[in-house]
Image (tube, rainbow, N blue to C red):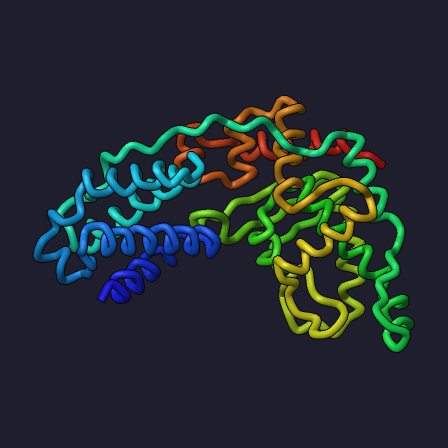
Amino acid sequence: MSDDLMRQFERYLKDNNATVSIKGYMSDVQKFLMWMKDKKGVELTIPLLKSEPHLLNKAVIEAFIKDLHAEKYAISTIARHAASMRVLGNFLAARGITPVNPAEKVKIEKLPLPDPRGLTDEERAKLEYVFRTPWERTTNKTKRKRKLDLAPKLIIRDRAIMLTLMYAGPRVSELVNIDVHDITLKDRSGWILIRNGKGGQPRKVDIPKQVREALADWLDVRKTFPVNDDALFIDLKRSFSCLTQRTIQNILAEASKRSGVDVTPHTLRHTYAYMLMRNGVHPKTAAALMGHSLEMALRYGSSKDEDKKNAADGLDNESIF
């Protein structure tokens, strides 16, 4: 059964990939396996590939990609599927299931680099302003008093979340995995350690003054709760456990309504990149700070710690308030 192939592929992916990437690779490869069964009448399994590795080859994969074009998939989606087939091929070759990576020579269409979609200065001002006053977050009268008491503390937490996303640029999946001991705050410097970034690569991100101050304020609030979780950002309403990605997305969705600015975690990451480049940060330093893919990091080269520190210091000048 191809189920065993997918299980082993998933275990292989878990060694060096973030959860979001694993889901993408698994979905794309599953689609290919279904295509093979429907179009070629072949159900690929590990024993079959070991005995007849020629069944999976460059021509077959290119036929699959051609069908994606015929079905009018977006170019970005097709490129992603082709990249996923390369990863599958790496797995098959690494495990000795096939003698070579059958997708190694499959061409992946290069996509034009999109224009930055970060927030303008005016939009940043509107967004940051709504995090300066507690929100009234009530659903019914019985819970009203408790939520009103929590409101000043929630806004301190949520402001720290928003500023960290916008002035340090982590992915939301990385943000929820930051623990208290992953941050270092000093008067004139500070940084966050992203322990498990994309591709499982750790990175140190220096943070500007406004983020250091917001995090310090939040840590003071956090200490007042009976927390048994190391997570930096926690739920204050029930469990005092790590916030989920969905909760953070909901916080920003509410901020969008209040500010009139369309914002998501990824929008804030784009904004961070835009501000870095506007401050003259070299692309290789921006890549190191943002934790780009290994391919992108190799393209730009390595970055010195001092360059990254100077980049964070430059963001002090971007503060709206």
